[in-house]
Amino acid sequence: MSVQQLSIQRLRNLLHVDLHFDDGINLLYGLNASGKTSVLEAVHMLGLGRSFRSLKLASVIAQGHADCLLFAKVKNPQGVTDSLGMIRRLDGDHGVRLNGENLSSVAELASLLPIQLIDPNSARLIEAGPSVRRQYLDWGVYHHNGSFFGLWKQAQRLLKQRNSALKCGTMRDDVRASFDPALADVAEQLNSLREGYLKLLEPVFFELLSGLVDLPDLKVGFYSGWSANRNYADILEETLDRDLQLGYTQRGPQRADLKLTLNGVNAAERLSRGQQKLVVVALKLAQGKLLSKAEGRKCVFLVDDLAAELDLSHRREICQQLVSLDTQVFVTSVGPNELTGCWPEEAKVKMFHVKHGQVSQE
Image 1 (cartoon, rainbow, N blue to C red):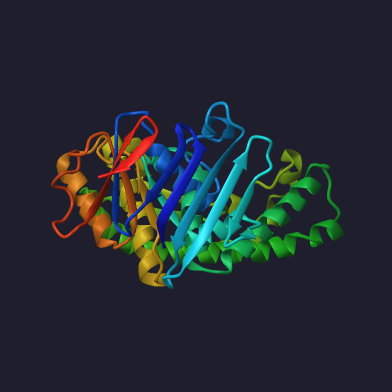
Image 2 (cartoon, rainbow, N blue to C red):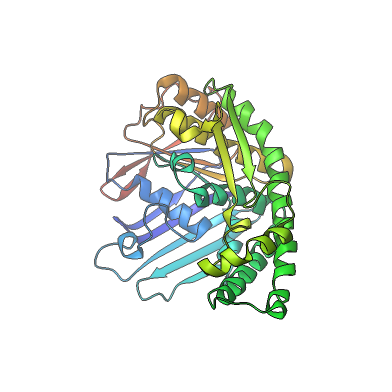
């Protein structure tokens, strides 16, 4: 997958920008607030339907305007170019079209244009709560197994039904029978898919990590959302009284987590800020590499301010790893020379200068 052409209208300070990109490295440089990160934001929205910088659409749409419009030509794995368009309006009347046809779900976007983001906030993957790491893990499982999304939607629906019943404070056996057995079955399947994917990801991750930082005692584990080696149906039975008191399901696939520990302690408490960033970079690169290796598909990497908090040797290693993935990369920097000498000699880097919301190719 790669973005061949991108038109951005009324997104932050990018009022009207038309760009053509290479399949490899695309470097956007400019001063802070020039608009370079907004270009990455536009690609992210086309792939995931949302901004990575703000949950509020009003801050994404250019001031004084009611909507923003994105259009891209995207080359798929078969080499065929698809037309992808998106409009986001303040009044909530949004639209996404692929080759002239309306798309009904964000999942279709994610499948069309897999996106991996590495930015200064990436350390949140280690520091934040389980939902952030679960989202990271599920991105990989979704792209690795076609049945995952359907099972995930079933689990969400069944949990919603069960939680609605629990809020009543009592539950008849026949009511429980209408969703508990199905929830237990779906939860076990989701657990199996997540564990299986992580087993494939681990060796790829540790191989990449070894080139970035020496952390031999770092461990990766998986928490399913309930006690290890226990049948989830038994868990639902045992926790029913407490679930009724709380009004929601305490344990289950909605509580799954990717555990990172160093010498048996939560990695967030032991790793420095710089180490955390390198671990997250390795995790993101590993997912891209595994997607290519196992599925024959490429994801697009968005790397915002790569030079931040990293010395030259680490910048060089990350740049070389990105090139070795043979995929499309969008990377930003403040100056044109921050990454000079970091790319392999054979790498072709297309340069774009971003200034006051205008983008010029060099």
